[in-house]
Image (cartoon, rainbow, N blue to C red; front, side):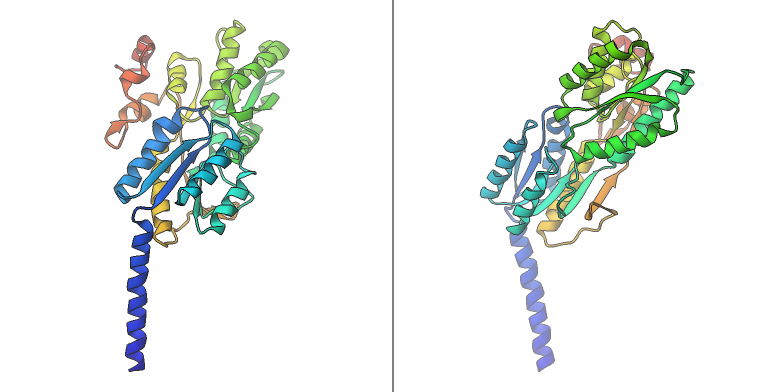
Length: 354
C-alpha cells in the first residue's frame, strides 16, 4: 500500500510538473535586448531569426524587442522595463558587459532566465551563453590578412598594420582583440598602432585611422578591423587621404556594405556568421529554460554553459559560393540583386549576376 501511494505521489508530481512547465511556457513573455545600431545586423538578421524561431516553438509567447542604441543606461532602463512587463526569459546582448553583471543577478534573483547573447558577461554566470566563437574570429581575420600580405610579397621591414578593435565595454570585442593578437603574432608585420573603438562607432574608427595615415603614411600595409563598420571607417579614411589602392582591410559580420566593399576591392575579408543561426539557438534555449530543462553545453566560458558556433571567412574568392549560392531557410544569405546594386560591373567580375 505504501509503495502504491509513493508511486502515485511520484506520478502526480510528474504530471503537475509537466503542467507547471506548460503553464510557464504558455503565453510567456520573452525579451530580446540588442546593444546598438552601429551594425545593421540586429534589425536585418538577429531579431527576425529569433522571432521566427520563437513563433515556431511557442506561438502564444510574446516577444519584446528593444535596441539600446549603444547606451548602457538606456539598456538598463529597457531591462527593468521588460521585467516590469513580466518577462520570464531575457536574451541580452550587452552594451557594457561589465555593468550587465548586475542586471543578470537582479533578474535571476526574481527567477528570470538570462541568456547572454553574442557578448559574454564575465562577472556574472548567466543561465547560458550563445555566440559565434569571437576569439576564433579575431584570429582568422588577422591570419588571413597576414597570408594575403605575404602572397602580395609585402616586405616586413618597416612596414606594419593598424589594429582597430571594438568597444572597450564589450567583452566579445576583447575576445576578438585577443584573437587578432594571436593571428598577427607570427606574421612578422609589426602593429604600428592599436585603437579600441567606443561603441563600435565607424565614425570614430575613421577619425582615428585618419590620424594614423597622417602619422605613418606608406608604412601602413594593412588594417585589421574587428568588424565591417570599423573596417568601413578605415576605408573611408584612406579614400579621404587619397590613398590608392587602399591597403587590405579586414572586417567581420558580413554586412551588405562590407560584402560590397569586398566586391569592389576596398575590403579584403569579412566573417560570415548568419545571425539567424545564433538567434534561433537563443530561442531554443529560452524555451528549454522556461520548460525547466537544462540544455547541454558544448563548452564553458566565464563559468557559463556555452555554445559557440564556427564562423566562415569570406574573401572575394569564395563570396559567391558562400554568400550567394548557399541557402539559409531556402533563401540566399544575401540576394545577388541586393549585393550588386551599384556594384554590377564588379559583381560580374566575380561571376555574380544580379
